[in-house]
Image (cartoon, rainbow, N blue to C red; front, side):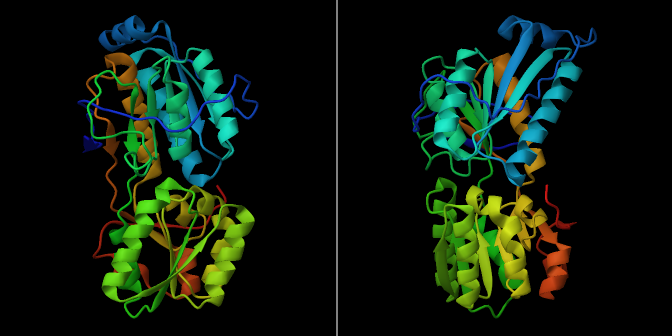
Length: 360
């Protein structure tokens, strides 16, 4: 298996295995049309000629979000903006359409079947289930699939350790540094006694970070209480249960189900004096206390760049996936004030970005 931190230049060889099923043909009425066309720029010659030779006069891209919530919306918006910038810079026409699977595999199957039948040049799925379904739908046609925000492409079956030249899958990973996030917790709460672990056990992206969190807490002699949820209502109930259990803090990895409910639970935790440490900055902008991880706007931009490379230069020279560099500490200052925590304790741990609560 090969992996590489994304930098300015993306390069060298990949592999994959496919997991999810692809359903029957149908229209995706949940799609949001965001097609963008950019006229040819006569100053961009070599790259444009390569693109047109490889893909025709117009590059067609399908962006497929697993569901609607702040993290995935941020990535999708960044992908769209970068595709526009690439088109303008290289004098090519890129048409893209963005779909939401609404967290439903059958809807994702429908979208995957549709976009493959429409002969798109590349599919950009965002989050693990979307990536699995799109990979399977594109298996027969070998349509390039460039995923984004798959926390562990190996555990989820998108890639493995065997080289398969010519495979059609690559992408960017927001692999979580669980230890860095829990280090924040101990910096702010050195006398912590019990931690709540809140996640959806059906999310592959949560499996390894939760195991890592348990190992970390066991080593530190800190107790933990697990609560799992798979719907918005269950998340709200689980959050209330953790408050009742008397936890001192709560940890959630990059879990799409919990992220979708963050606006409904952040006040429950903050008003109880319980900091919520999470796997992505989008949680923090929706009211959670703090995270240390990947900037999702950067992740989306890097994914779009990788997709363009796949379309123009082919897949053979690409890694199986690229780990996006993280390490940015994001703190919600409004939540910090409610909790009464001086977040300057994080200044020695990395670059701190301050945000406030929004509903975006």
